[in-house]
Image (spheres, helix red, strand yellow):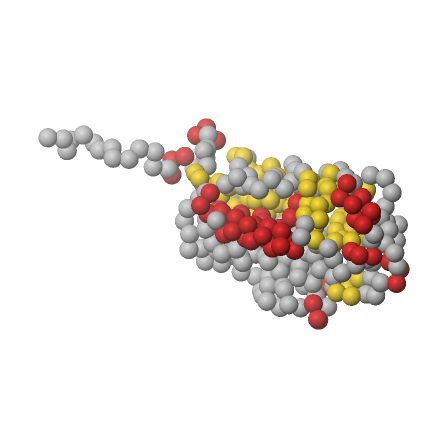
Length: 337
């Protein structure tokens, strides 16, 4: 037996992802990496390991997996129905996946992207400083049946832990700051953007998410004369028909559509996880407010391990019940004076 995860079945959007590849924009490569970086931090906390370790990102649906030897796993992000050999598993929790057992993960029950983490992380080849699959750049490919992923050495031992997930799976308020072309949109248009509820369109992927406004679209003065320039995840491009597109982790590196604003990085997972039909509303904040929001989000991610608590499990649904020490200090009784 070896430390590997065997793929028996995989949904069409199952890829290996980590924090991505910053620093390659000049070479035409966007950052990429996980669509929901908060989920990476939650998985790292549950397994008490570095957040840089890669996990499986499951877009919409998971698959069926087998451990080559006993390994710890954690499940985070969009909740999905999960079970091991038919025994249901709690989401946003860590578990032991025994060697040879089958882990089944179904469709997302809320949100879009679920994550499967393993103790030790996946030890695939590092490409340009990361293990993340980036389809648009031809770096790696989605997983499919028959693939086997090597798993690194695991220094941890604890499982059966959980934490409360940050609520980001149903839309809601999203903070934005002004972008390079925000002033091409007059004040009335920017105010109307804040006052308008936007519906997450079914058309969306790791490159961008289309939003449908209630009422007419948004228009910029001189928007057709914008030069193509550097763009980044979180930028809100307004297309010629006035439709907002939020650029995501695997977006292109340059673009010529006017940008009315940019989503704060700490709020971008809320956009990524908003399911089709979810309602979103943008709110402009100042640069100082954005910096403070990012600081608070960074501190919250760093402190996730302090929020871990034991997972309360139903003994009737624990196939490994006999492996637990349920009573401590019991003797045969013949050592009593």
